[in-house]
Image 1 (cartoon, one colour):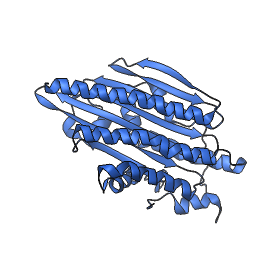
Image 2 (tube, one colour; image 1 turned 180 degrees about the horizontal axis):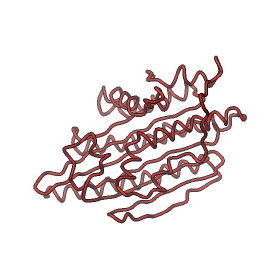
Image 3 (cartoon, one colour; image 1 turned 30 degrees about the horizontal axis):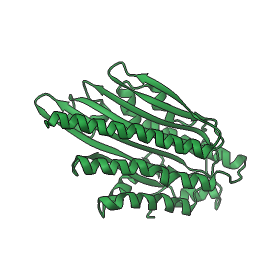
Image 4 (cartoon, helix red, strand yellow; image 1 turned 120 degrees about the vertical axis):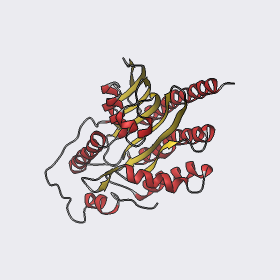
Length: 306
């Protein structure tokens, strides 16, 4: 088998997995919500490729959940993809992935994000450069230690077969990446983040990416099931909407996936489905001392071992 034939087989395997992963996650969310279904849009990108966007809105449990698959290609890597890999500038590219963001209705249920992706950058006369990336992170508004521990225990179990130091490395990367410098706080309680993964070879790198993608449901759904029926009032709802503003700030200012999608000419509605349906900002907000809201800032919006 030629190298080109092997690359095509690898791309087909990744795309098949990603489409199945989108189906699996959507099914789990629909089952948990119990009242809403996903709307699906098939879209084409003028410069090459397209995707399958699915959004659930106004559910009993999930106010909005988006689970997107995309497979795009083009003649030149977008700036967001070469900012930390300048040697790849000018190469044509192919990118495919699944990305999701979930905004629950109940403030006691955390917001969550996950994505897994595969890139190939090619140039005539040179060997293709490929890599995997992805991860998941949790953004609670009213954290429960049991939930955070379960989230990180699941991440540890996912990483364990791939090396003793993988969890600590990818947890630290997540803490560093999902950080808002202008607020001096993490976006939430972290999870896993990895990029440029190819040093393990294709088979192991792909297996790890599959484990992270498949592990999201195991990490997140038990937390949703545990918390979505808790009673809350206007105070908790207002704080949830205020903290959602931080999510918007990160995604629009720092998130490489958002920048890549916009710079590569992706479908704007699909890219920005990560935005919450409602959010608010408040000038110079300070939580009341010793309140549940203050506890979020004091104990959780900083890197922490679990």
